[in-house]
Image 1 (cartoon, one colour):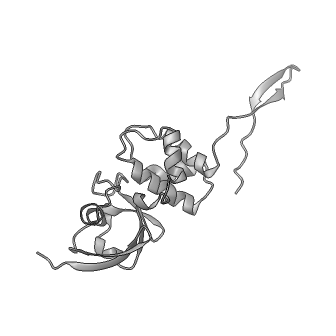
Image 2 (image 1 turned 180 degrees about the horizontal axis):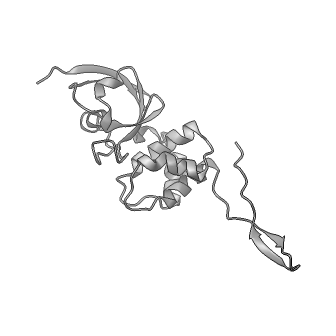
Image 3 (image 1 turned 135 degrees about the horizontal axis):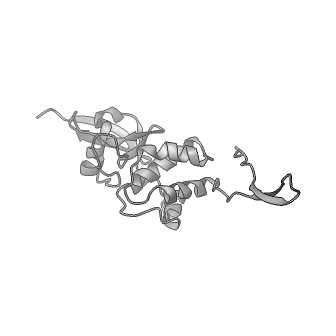
Length: 184
C-alpha cells in the first residue's frame, strides 16, 4: 500500500488538510474522506460532468483530478455555492423552472453554470448550451436548465416581436423583427 500524502487546500472557503493515496481522485476524497457528497460519480472518466467542481476558477471534472494535485489550490463544490442561509440564485431558478428531475446531474450542472456566469455574467442561449455541453442529463432535455441559467443572468430570451411589414400588394403582413445583439 503506497504511503499517504498530506494535502493542504481550500475547499468552499475553508482551509483544510487531508491525507490521501497518490492514486485517489479528487472526487473519491471529496465524497469518501471529506463527506462532501454533492459531486456525483457518474462515469468516472470525465464524460458526464456529474462531478463538476471549480478548481482555481476553472471548471473541472473531479474524477479526472488527482487529489494530490490540489495542494495549495482553491476548490468550490456544490456545497459551497449557497450562502449560509438560503439558496444561490442558480439553485432557486433551477427549482422555479423545474430544471431538476432525478437530481444526479443537478449539482454538476449548477457548478458548471456558476463557472459560466463567473466568467460571462450575461451569456446568450448558445453560450449557455455550449458551456453546459459537458454535463449530461437524461431526464430534462436541457431547455428548462438553459432557461434557468438565462433567467439568473438576466438574459432570458423574450418572444420574438412582430412588426408590420408592407408587401408589394399594399397589404400589411406580420414578420418577425430582427434579433438584437445582447448588451454587455
